[in-house]
Length: 233
Image 1 (cartoon, rainbow, N blue to C red):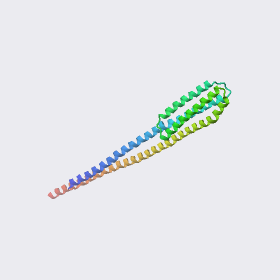
Image 2 (cartoon, rainbow, N blue to C red; image 1 turned 45 degrees about the vertical axis):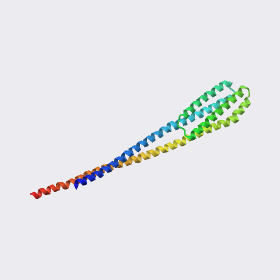
Image 3 (cartoon, helix red, strand yellow; image 1 turned 90 degrees about the vertical axis):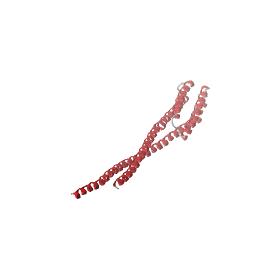
Image 4 (cartoon, helix red, strand yellow; image 1 turned 180 degrees about the vertical axis):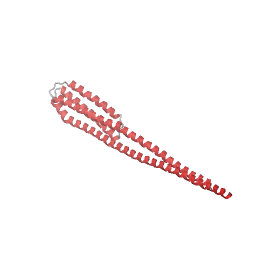
């Protein structure tokens, strides 16, 4: 009877410990998944959000430099040739094209890709307007060139800047979502770690109880032997 009781208790303990081990292993796998999620979120914040945000800053700078170069040529008294100004504008265009290619290498959400496509169209439209202004200047039509630069040119330039601001806003929104996801993963990791510690404590208590039960079972057997020796005497 005692051996059957011991076997039964050990079987129950084995099932309990096996369940606890399974929970610990499952929690470890989930924790690993959360850590990988945190790593991916922070990597995405740098590669896909911080890099594009910096790129947008450089794009804005090049656009303003283009605008300023052409404005100085039209309204300043400095003697510059249209060919010289055109070379300056083309240098900025090459820099803008390089920055756009860098932007396109990052992960783009649908809204972001759509906005970037619109920006590229506006860039081409504004570059065409600049060429028309320089053509008028080469023909001596400075008044018409200034009018084209001021009215349609100013509107196109403002639309291009607004498009860049829209792209910057998208970076901010998605960046906040990534930070939120990282915080959720961190909170989940903390809960799972607490549960793992609790399970480890429960495992230790179960082992202690098993040891005490084994000692209790063995004591009556030793008392029985003593009583037999006493009766023999």
